[in-house]
Structures are given as C-alpha cells and as structure tokens.
Length: 281
Image (cartoon, rainbow, N blue to C red; front, side, top):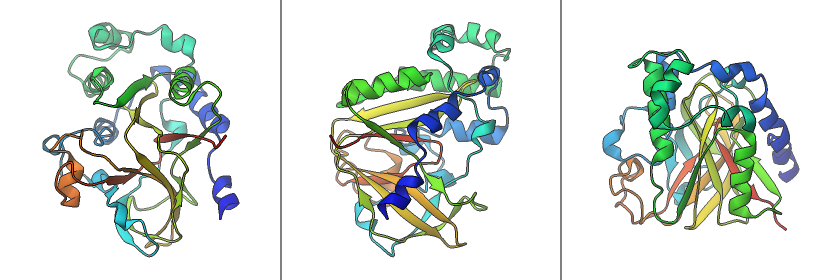
C-alpha cells in the first residue's frame, strides 16, 4: 500500500512548479459567481456556525475520529480542480512588488482594474481581512503569496534542516459528482507527527494560501476512499484533538452534534489545499 500511495502524492517540486508557472495569470481573478462563492467560504475551518450557510455542500468534510475505520461510509464533498485555469503563485520578486494589505485595497483595485463594490473587489477584501486576523492561542498563521514565502514559513515551523513532504487530495480520475457517499477502503495511514501546516486557498487575482499551524495535538491520516459511483480518492485528513480554544459556535460542533470544545474534530482537505509534514529524521 505504501509505495502505491506514495506514487500518487504530487511531489513538492512538481506541484509547486505547476502553481508557479505562467506568470501571466497574475492579473487574472476569479470572476464567476460560483467560483467567488467557493473562495469566500474556503476558511470555514475557522468561521463560526452563524457565519455559514448550513446548506452549503462544502461543509461535508467534517467527521468524528471514531469514524476512521474500514467500511465506514460518509457523505463527503470533494470537488475536482482544474489547476491550469486557476491563479498561480507568483515569484517572491513579483509578490514583493505588489502591496498586500486592506489599507492598500483602493490602489489594488485600480492596479487590477476592478471597480469598488464588484464581486472581485469583495473577494479581495475578504482575503486581505482573513490574512490580517489575529491567530488564536497556540496558532501561527501566514498568508503565502509566493513559493519562496511558503517554503520559508514551513521551515520556520519545522526547522531549517527539516525534510518536508506536501500532501493533497488526489483522484484516480476526475470526479463527475462532487458530493457523494465515500467508504473507507483500507486502514487509514497515520503520520508520525503531532504538528502539521495546513494551507487553504483564498480568492485573489493571484494564488494566495492561508497557512496555519497549531501547537495543540493534531493527528494526520491518509485515507483511501471509494465513492458510490466507483471513483477512488486518496485524501489527507486531520483530527484536532484539542478544540478547547475554538469558537464555541464553530460550524463543526453543530454539524457533528457534539458539545462545543469538548471533543476532537476531524476533517478532510479539499483537493486544492496543501498539508505540509516533516519527514522522519
């Protein structure tokens, strides 16, 4: 199982090279209503329940740690992603030449030729504010706008000499249905680490990743899933063992029908999100 799964990981160099390709994407932004909506709800791992639309299918990623067993079937939302049509990471030099703060939003809208009040402007404002929020206790956050800055953040967390691996959800073939029942096919593989970095995409003219790492215990698994229509997926899943610092109205507590801040909460990662882990020394 191990070698086959490893072959299906997107290697760090190849994956990030793809995301840094074609710098002409720097002036492109998500323009369709659906894509802007998807981007604006990507940070539901941090948002309280009152801020969420509970009919949103993308909330179907949370589960209990007891659900991690062979034969368990869950309704999970795993959309496919066309990376060639998505904004790409800039180089450090390009990213450094463009201001990245809500204080510069008017100038940024002019730079990207977007009108105030447009969907694009609202998406940019959302992302900038997300990146300026203060982290919770025991959490380190960073918004990466370039490959180099993302690597620097990972090394600041795991150490300069750490060998790193990046994981993401992968499909054997492009799915036809995003929300469907998936069954755990094999015993989930647990990684020998208690700390990870999770990087979530945010809507912006170029690729922006909201990366965060928590000091509290997190258990990371790689899960082999089989869909009801025959599709197969390899998906990383994180279980937050201590939720005592979470918002008491966090959406996962209501979805899982558990007492706030009392139990571990697990979730799968959407295909365009990244999980960084240190390799064993």
